[in-house]
Amino acid sequence: RMYPGQIIEYRVSPLLGIKTKWVTEITHVVPNEYFVDEQRFGPYTLWHHKHFFSAIENGVAMEDLIHYKAPMGALGSLFTPLIVTPKLEEIFNYRTQKLTEMFGSYS
Image 1 (cartoon, rainbow, N blue to C red):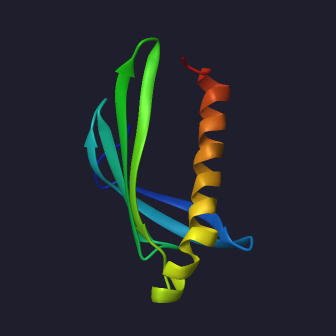
Image 2: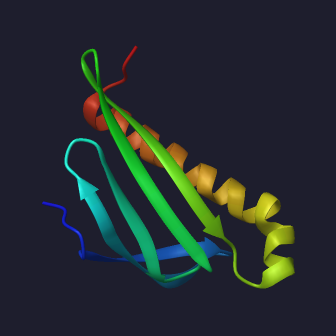
């Protein structure tokens, strides 16, 4: 069960396959509606990710609202559309693929 204050540790490879530690905290939970995770340590200067859930016919719809900032100031901002955004799209496409494999697709 997810709860506010829960700490989750990951190993991620955000750039060039170099592994780094990523620590997020679940800061808000409203069961069956949404939860929020925020970075405490990791590859971003800022990471705030709100996961929304809503009932739909034959399942559940999931929507994400993410606010993030790449590290390294102006240089990080310059590389965000070239490196960071495509990497995030890859991660969320992978998640969609895995959820579809586990639960099937919806129409």
